[in-house]
Length: 71
Image (cartoon, rainbow, N blue to C red; front, side, top):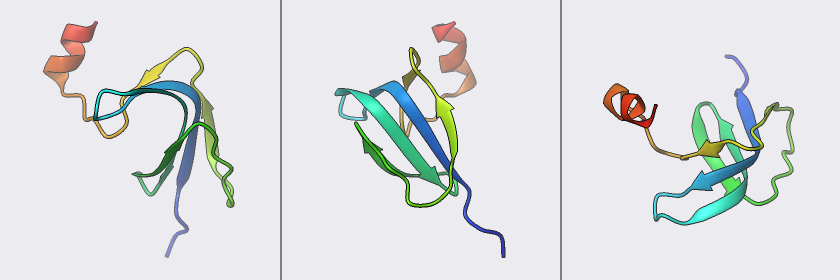
């Protein structure tokens, strides 16, 4: 059995499902969001992406028709 794959997306602007804006970090494990917070300190090794200046919509699946309209 393989170990869980974790990803930390740092320093991003997020639009949460309730419409709230947050600047911070998103931690995923095995492709599932496990934490959204201004500061996250992982306790296990993770792959890290610096997303400063980018906007993330955690939990939203962007379909082709939406992405085409957003440019």
